[in-house]
Image (cartoon, rainbow, N blue to C red; front, side, top):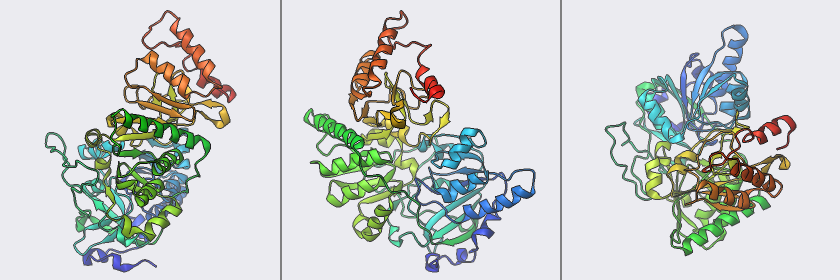
Length: 504
C-alpha cells in the first residue's frame, strides 16, 4: 500500500484522488509535460488510466481523443506504450524508445519532433512549442511547504512545473526515501539577454536546491503509487563490445602518454547500452582512479566504478539501471548519496558546461560514412529508431567525441560504414573518433580523403572493406570534386540494395 507519510503538505493532502479521477482532468488536445528519462521517474498510474479512458472514448466517438506528450527523454511501456497502443498521442517529443511509438511514428500516425535534449527547456520557455496545459510529474514525496522531493530522474520537470497551467503529481512510495538530498535543481537559468554564467566548474559542484518548487495552487490532483521503474537488464559483454572497449582504452592510454589527457582522464559522458557499459567495465578494470562523470544517466557500470573508487563522483539527470543495478543502489544508497548528483537536463546536457569541463563523449551510431558523418537516428534514412537524445549536446561541445558501433548489423547484412550516410545527425566536423570491433579511427586533424583511409582501413568489416575501397578509388578518379570525392549516382546505392534484397 502507498505510504501516505510521503504527502506532508496539508493543502495537497486534500487533493488525493485515484488515477482514474486524475485522468478525467486531462482534456483532448492538451499539451502534457510528463516526467521521465530513460525509464526512470516517469508517472506509472495516470497514463494507464488515461489510455483506458481514451480507448472507451475513441470507441464511442468519431473524433479521436489524442494529447501531445512532452517528456525529458524515453519513458516506459506504462506511459509511451499504453498511450501509443490506443492511438492517444498526436505529437511526441523530444526522445522515445518505445516500439509501439516507433511503429506509429514510422507509419505516419504519430508526429514526432526530435530535439537536442539540452534545448527543450529553452524552446518551452520561449513559447516555440505552444502552451503547456498540464504537467504530470512523479515525485518521491511532498514536503510540508509543498516543495517536491524529486524521483529517480529530473529531466525537464523543473521547466514543466514552471510552464504548466495545472499540475498532477504522482507520489511514488516505491522510490527510495533516501533519494532526498541527491538532487541539485538550479534556478538561475534565463533566456537571452538575461543569462548569467553557470558557476559549475567541477562535476561534484552543487549549485542549486535539493527540491522542486511547486505552487500548491497549480496542483489539481495528487495520486499515490507504489510501482518500480521499468528498466531492462544489460546483456553481458560479448567479444564485439569487449574489443570496442579495448580499442578505446588503448587510445586513452596513448593520449595520457602523449600528455593530451591527464591520468584521471576528463569527465566522462556515456550513452546507454551494452557497448558503453563494456567501456565502463574496461575503465574499472584498468589503472584509472579518481575519475569523474558529467553525463545524462547513471548506469550499472558507473555504480561499479563508484564502488571500486575508479569513479569518485557522477553527475547526471537520471538513473538507467538494470534490476540488479536498482537492487545494488537501494541496498547501498547511503554509500552512493554523496557521490551521485542528479540535475535537470538543461544543466546535465548544457553545451557550455560540456565544453568548459572538457567532456569525453562516448555515444552509439547506426552508421557512419567514409568521411566521418554519423547517422544515429534513422534506419535507411527514413525510419526513426529512437532519436538524437543528448549525443549532439556532447559530441559538438566535448573535448573528445567518440562514436561506437559493431561494424555490421543484421547478421552481417548491413555495414555500419557506408559510402554516404542516409541521414546526418552529427557532421564530420563534430566526430573526432569512430570505433568498431575492427579498430579505431582518429580523425582529428585529417582532411576528408585522409579520414576515408582511416575509417575504411580501421573500422570497416573485412567483408565490406574492398567494396568501400573500390567506391572511394572510383570517386577519386571520377573527375569530379576532389575534396570529398563521391559518386552521386551510387552514394546511397548500398541502402537501396538493402531495401530491395535485404543485403548491402
